[in-house]
Image (spheres, rainbow, N blue to C red):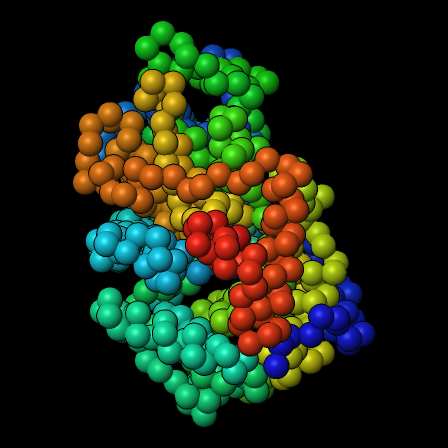
Length: 472
Ligand SMILES: Cc1cc2nc3c(=O)[nH]c(=O)nc-3n(C[C@H](O)[C@H](O)[C@H](O)COP(=O)(O)OP(=O)(O)OC[C@H]3O[C@@H](n4cnc5c(N)ncnc54)[C@H](O)[C@@H]3O)c2cc1C
């Protein structure tokens, strides 16, 4: 049965005392801010943005060449944006999942899968080497069928996974409910080893601390307002100063981009999340879920959910909201209608959680592109590289995104820069008002498909044929 479209008063009541901030960032030991940039400094490499992409860029650059002088400029605080407000699902997938990878990069997929697994293993090794404690739990993931038509779709995914050597386990209705006690589950596909869970804010803070120990200078509260050529390098200006650097990397994700061309390829899509209070022991036991897998359900509009170290449930997704004209900003991070619907769906998934208070409710912008995977490019004659477009799966892929961006800056072809995924770009979104109209029509069609046995209407089929998509 599809999830409800409205919330009952009890679901709304659970939100009464929710704090309007991401659970992960609401920590008493959040590191103090680094000073903003004052005056004029020089560097070999300047990085714009201190989310995962920018921080991995700085760390990997320093690891490769400890003498390289690296500066990171961050408009807000380290990890305050998508990197500190996501679900913390750290997937090996570089392609927003296997099905998307297979559709878009068929011939190259085996190599991309290997690179993704290497990336996750490399990430784990880097975190250990730098003492980054972000609660990395290699618990795998479970996709749950909550509607009869999902069962066939999951069987197709199972075949695809097995073709590509992924260790997956099929769970029928009884088996999946024995694993995680949800009365909505009709079947499940469990995958081991391809997904870890992390506390994303601690990952960002830990990476920033590791960067600083290696000598990277990080300036918070420093919005870069202008990028221009300067001699053989670039000049990056902010309100308080400027950096002249030989090379620069733009890691600004869904934010209004400093390079105008990126506006055609990325739209900010807001995704909303709740966290419950830590569950009392009896309620926690009633869920089963002893493997602590990251879970998502299989609809077009899907939920993702997980347990935290202190046994809260973090529950997000479903609504993916585009605000016309690439609408962006802190005022979009609270959306009561989405929170109420999530609170309702949480209890529909786990009736055991009826009455459990929700302590945090927040939103964040996802950098959606039409192919749902990162894309890269250079500007200013190769002095600047950028990466964006991870769509909702950038926690793991951002490390790979950073590696490729650093390779692009060398100007020499490498195994990574020769990949089709790196050489090609997504189709651009049309300009407004067509952009907004098209996205609204797509969201409406996806909701309709979810409520009508997964059947895709003419509009979705037409977009499928040209490879234009919308996802979170
Ligand atoms: C609600 C939500 C849930 C998600 N769940 C998952 C998940 O479970 N798993 C997963 O893999 N992915 C998930 N994602 C996506 C994932 O969080 C992102 O792909 C990833 O964090 C991208 O990292 P980033 O560094 O590229 O971007 P960000 O973390 O957004 O960092 C960009 C930084 O650039 C800075 N910046 C922008 N413009 C400027 C400027 N002009 N000057 C200086 N600084 C600037 C910003 O302040 C920001 O800190 C989710 C995203 C959201 C929003």
